[in-house]
Image (cartoon, rainbow, N blue to C red; front, side):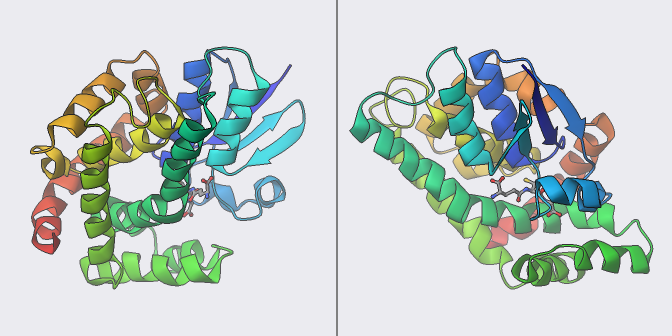
Amino acid sequence: MSIELYHHGSSVCAAKVRLALAEKGIKWDGHYLDILAGEHHNPKYLKLNPKAVVPTLVHDGQVIRESTVICEYVDDAFSGPKLKPKDPLIQANMRLWTKLVDEEVHPSVRPITYVATHRHKIMEQSPEEVEEHIENDPDPFWRARKRGWIYDGFNAPDVKAAIQLFNKLLGDMETSLQDTNWLVSNEYTLADTALTPYLNRLEMLSLMKMWDKRPNVTRWFENVKSRPSFQPAIFEYFPEELRTFMIENGRKAWPKYQKML
Ligand SMILES: N[C@@H](CCC(=O)N[C@@H](CS)C(=O)NCC(=O)O)C(=O)O
């Protein structure tokens, strides 16, 4: 059996899949693509993932895309602890969280990350290479937004709404975690897997003050971090230099984001 994952260290979507694989205890082989250097735009990878995004899972030659779909596939296709609740209602509640992550949380983490830090890494390249990086994004919607994040930074039009969405998300998590240990029940599920890389991203960008008065979120994140899956899935593939770069830039970004809340 072969399980290959195309991924990158700082990618939240890839981290989500690495978490699911670690929770199931599955061994996999990695293909590391430096998305900040544009390695995901190479024609060979575009055949696997025409949207030019990571992650992509290849299981015995079959290609599976989209991190949420991959996580469910991993849970269904392999043995190990079940990450989807059996109860259909709790399962529906789990999917409301994973849908929210796909539709709102992920599109909002992108501006926050680009503006605070990724744009500085991309801008280390020549102006022509920066343009090439933007133009290589096959999706015109994301291409236009990326252009704004890179050149306009905190003034890009979608940044304020993105940080406010996270504030609302944390409030909703606080409420959900009032009566249960994990997001949808007392069992850990893919809802918890899905949110973990985003809270970690906020923490890396010095945005943890957003939940210092939210004790349930604080407890949940501490519990997430104490799971054996957390450290390897989140940090084993994070180049130290990039991690330091993101943390340092995040510290400088917090006062600007704070004003938008
Ligand atoms: N809906 C996709 C989104 C994947 C995605 O946006 N991946 C980001 C990293 S988290 C990426 O590859 N970005 C490359 C780029 O923006 O150039 C999924 O869930 O797999």
